[in-house]
Image 1: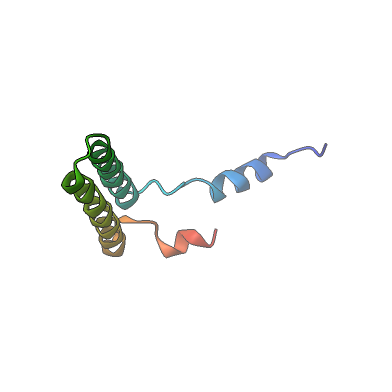
Image 2: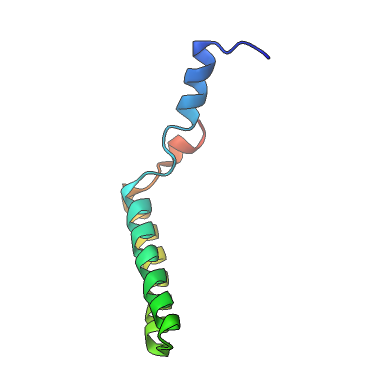
Length: 82
């Protein structure tokens, strides 16, 4: 085993300091989770329109996340090359 220096640990911590925790990502994930729950209830209750509402909400969540990221609330490109 090789010894790990504090500089090595800091370098690795800096690379993984974000994990995608941005307002755009959290909003998109929240909408998609609700969408899957709505779709699952639609399947469970054999309610076809409710299922399709869930599918539509997934698309809405993806669009909202992308728009928020384009508005500057997502991960910045400069962070990607660290």
